[in-house]
Amino acid sequence: MVTELLAAWAHGAQALALLNAAQQQGYTTYLAEARTPQEFAQFSGLPAATADDVLAALVAHGVAEQTDGRFRLTDDMTAALGGLVDFAAQIEEAVLGARMVDSVLRTGEAPLTAADALVVARANALRPSAPGAGALVEKLFESAPEMWQAMAGGRLLDIGSGVSGFVLTAATVLPGLRATTIELVPEVAAVAAARAEEIGVADRIDVRVMDAREFDEPAAYDAAFWAQPFFPSPVRAATLAMILRSLRPGGFLLMQQLDAEPEDVRPAFTLRRMVARAQQLAFARPLADLVAEASSAGFEPIRTVVTDLGPVALLRRPPS
Ligand SMILES: C[S@@+](CC[C@H](N)C(=O)[O-])C[C@H]1O[C@@H](n2cnc3c(N)ncnc32)[C@H](O)[C@@H]1O
Image 1 (cartoon, rainbow, N blue to C red):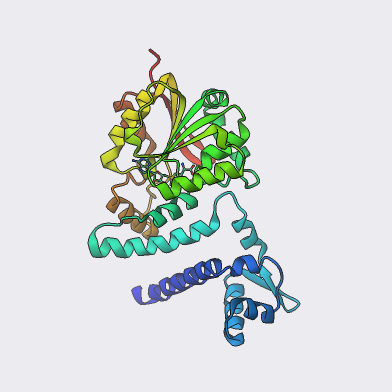
Image 2: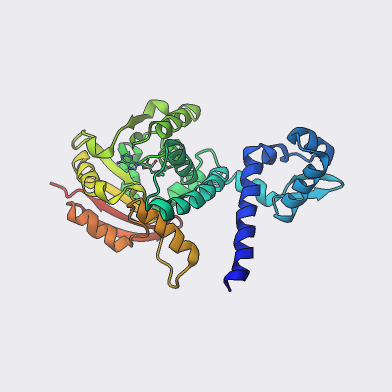
């Protein structure tokens, strides 16, 4: 019943607000070490009784635990924050999702600011420094060994690079890889460039800030990775045409399907679909449809595989 569901929805919204504020206020970082309630009150600047209530709420939600009168993050929360993807950004993306739902209902649109785009990019990127990130990318390419080989000593074009989680991770595993990344939002590309410097691969990564449709380096790349879920319908055909002409004959294109239509109607899915469609994204487009879309742009399908990172399709520019 809706009256009962409201209590669950209200709790979910409040729990998300708790987690987001705890992250933004630096409490999760501070609680990486065990702290007394007095230390926490002093750090947060909150009245002692409020600080106690905050700690109790963090414990109740599995974020922190209490041992011998001290509070620290749970192992679960510590693992999430140090995981393969940026969990802090995923919390922010969840908050953004609620704002986007509101926007769609009021205006029919869900536009992203540059700051929103950065949240989305961070929340959907592997962290190259996370333990296991390199191994995960290598495993993904067990399904596309010819592309991995082409990347090992060749040039990769990364279209819709975001903060370049994929490319930077691949570059750490493949010392011979050179890549060009294309990203529309300058604030997002700036983070990718800074991360490339940080991990010492900037000399091999050429970060371009532009609309992918305008990129013009014909037949210069051995392989391409297209972040297709983030490209709206009006730009997809021109983007695929650009990728085709940028690849050398026989060069590879890898695409990933991120979301899938559930068999039953799941409420969360309907909300995400509503927002994505208002953004004109090809939300949960099935892999077969993605292959058909790329084929009609002139690509030749090689295979589709379900990997640990979801379903992927490998295609190539026809060899001349
Ligand atoms: C979220 S990222 C994908 C994650 C990324 N592949 C990684 O490995 O970290 C997708 C990016 O595509 C960018 N994008 C969307 N349309 C674009 C276009 N027409 N040209 C260039 N970039 C675009 C978005 O700004 C977004 O940052």
